[in-house]
Image (cartoon, rainbow, N blue to C red; front, top):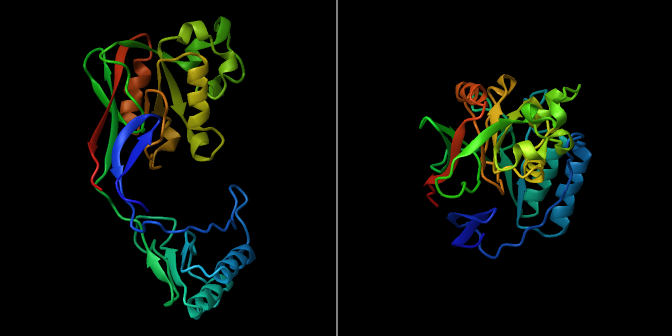
Length: 276
């Protein structure tokens, strides 16, 4: 909530950020869990505990995904618990939904709850890679650039197997999740090209693990090309502590795959706009 705080990701400066509630104290109540989710009773217990702790505001990041049954849509445990909190003088803010943007994607049914939906903003974080033929491909990722105007060769992960062997896990190797089967001598000093598949969306693979793999094999940087099955998912800027980016365009990804035979490229980072 403070004002004019430098935003530094992986040692790279992205401007200053300011909040709206300087010196605010935050109480966090965990009621849901990744993969499992949780029960309404856990959320109600968290709301009741927050009220008992005399908080001033409850910010609830969950909301119904569909209209509750019946005419009295607010007769559900969570909304009733929030009504009790409002009666105790707590200002309740709830997310407008977890879907959209599309018609009827916002959901809020209780008049005592202040509902907030996400909107567009004027910030744009853009990385780009320049190929040896001066073709520029944009991507997303909060990452530093390569040094100067040096040129680097690309190498795709499946083309860098140890002893050039083919194994049953070759497909997963394309996601750069395990460095043990990669030839470090082949990759050292090159930009490693990895597949960003549906497994990243499902949480089965991660950018962090791929970054660890790239550092383990001494890659100069990393590029993720988009698997066709990931089309339609929004890719947000991902912090990276080495030069890298994720290519969000399927057409640009095809260009990158076709050029994964040794070709010289360099990575740049630029911050087009950051309005606070």
